[in-house]
Image (cartoon, rainbow, N blue to C red; front, side, top):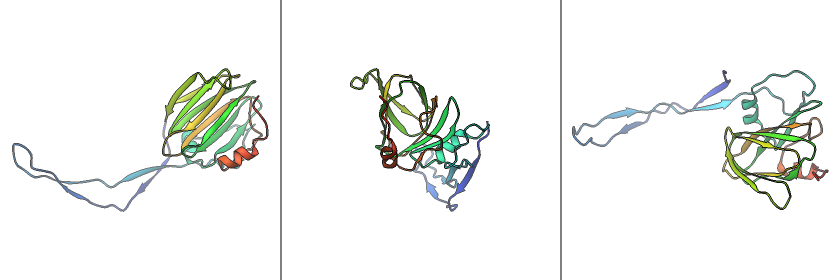
Amino acid sequence: MKKKFILLLTLPLVVMSFSCQSGSGGQETTGITTPVVAEIPVSDVDFDVDLGGEPWAFDIEAATLVNDSYRSANWTGKYMQLVFMSLKPGEVIDLEIHEDHDQFIRIEQGEAVVWMGKSEGELTFRQEVEDDWAIMIPAGYWHKVENTGDVDLKLYTLYGPPEHAKGTTNKTYKEAKDAHDHHHH
């Protein structure tokens, strides 16, 4: 599968590096390093629009990586919902439970710890996760995810059925916490 990326070239600085003498031949070598190239994902996803109920195909990895909102519901159907999330270092998806639906989380960037358990006070499952990991949360399990890394944790989650109101967008963790007016009990 091809991915769309813009290559960002820094000023092509040519750096001369000299190596130490080799042990046997005593020759010096001169090397030139290549310019630094950074890959920036490109996505045309509008994080303020929920396309639920309409057919949609897009690069989910690129969309996940460019999302800067704590929570953005971008496809809310009758039986499923796609939500993009970006957690700053130390931020969490607070302890919650979904009695009537399952949840899938896919980590695209960062490091986190996920806890789960059948009761709020006994989270017996603990797993460190990072890029390319998936988390399966069964209905009826308490769960919490914490960004333990030093970069934003970029993930997407699928709820079945939907968890949030269609088009929900919370730019920050504080905004999400203030707007979260229902309990998961």
